[in-house]
Length: 137
Image (tube, rainbow, N blue to C red):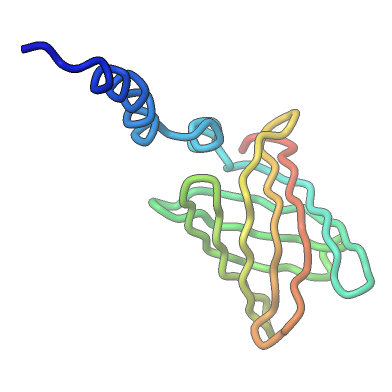
């Protein structure tokens, strides 16, 4: 059976598009394999103030646990998070408040970099925060 020339051209141009829809994107392929466990430097902004601190991310089963120590221990937070592709969604709390955070996992120069936003429960303003990996556990 001989296919018309127009059918062959359509098949030629459609085949790469069909295959491409089943391949992961470059960003997914790069970030899915990144190990995000480790010690991090924290930099963020809250209202008009900037803050710094450290964070430790550990994996517990299918979830990640995060502990933040901000401003030399003046504030500490504990969180549980879920990772989906290049996104880390976090619920966190201290002794009085709770909140949520969402980070995009990126490749940094010396390991992962988590760039995100967060808010305390009931708050209407988003704050920005970046976690830069300093060392493995």
